[in-house]
Image (spheres, rainbow, N blue to C red):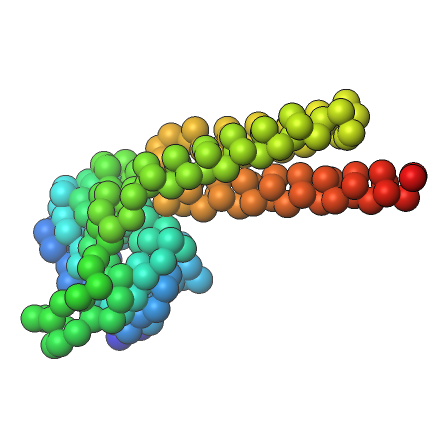
Length: 212
């Protein structure tokens, strides 16, 4: 089957009035995608969440779908789309699925995404979101200390612009709900702020050298 065929099957169940309590998802996969569903067609499945019973469970028996953080973020988006109406959970493999599809397993572990009724989906097993927040906060604290130490050489305008970048990144680390998608958005901003600070520090040293 392809994604379009899967959508038709789910719509048929929905329109019949039946509700799925458990779906075993069999497809080849890689980080953040399967051969049936990926970000290119996930929007096409809008509305299929009403085919699932409240608290339904989806088992994604596809190799390596959640093998890294971007993959886990995809599973959150998948869960929100497929189980948004009544909530539930999605289990996705973090590595190669070993054995027969119906009786095998993933020795590298699984990532579990819990979906609240209404569509809020977040990783609850397989990755430590709280630890990621702590790491990002530490990086921002270090960047702020570095900015404070260089502020005199930067001048007030450049210092203010860099502080705005750091504050924007810090705001993202306070996002609620704190999901894997939020982690990735915050990481991108933190890395950008760190890069701009490093570039400013380098250009400042160059200016000092050329002025001697």
